[in-house]
Length: 222
Ligand code: E4P
Image (tube, rainbow, N blue to C red; front, side, top):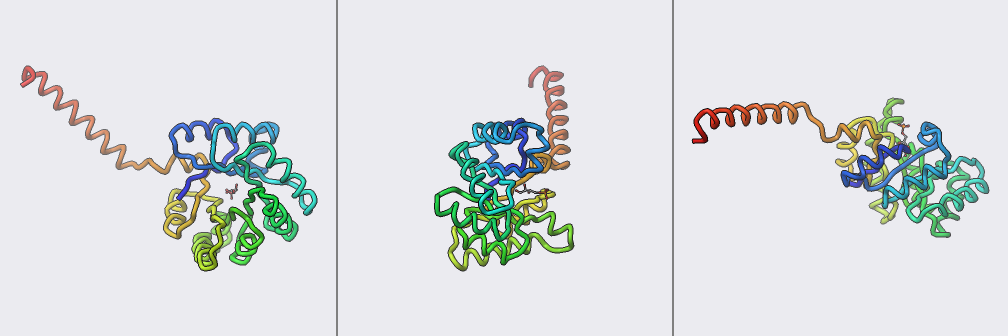
């Protein structure tokens, strides 16, 4: 499974990319707004840090607005994927953009039929939102499981990005149901490799090693 960072913060992206752990980035209008900087400047900067796919979302609602914004956004860097919302107009836009060779990520996917239609329209990626589905008493993981089965059954090349990830357990569950990608907020990303027993074990090793060194020194190195 590939790991994307779900953030528009260049410092976080740089930090985790230097560890070699970031396969791509997803942003959305809320994440861009949080940075308080110009949209194009932020996206272009992210594209210089990460060589994998970087999703940047259109903000228009009509087919015409989405297609025109998507063409503009796609021209900013070669690794851009244009995020299109899962609406009627969005689906029409995905079809046209896909025919033009512009990569798309259909976002705000909450049902199997939405995901299937997006794949049929030619989306390169679809983003089911796990956390937001869980919030309303549904199961985000079940949706990813169903989508994976159906896309595989019919040989679609569309990749599933498990989005709206809220915990390390979401990442594990997404991997268990064959999600191609999980896009993970920076605060969760940092928690993926930490475990209190690892810290405890390390402290114990350090303590035992220090005791051993002390004993050796007292025995004159014997
Ligand atoms: C997906 O690409 C979205 O940016 C994101 O995962 C939304 O997550 P949220 O529900 O935490 O806002």
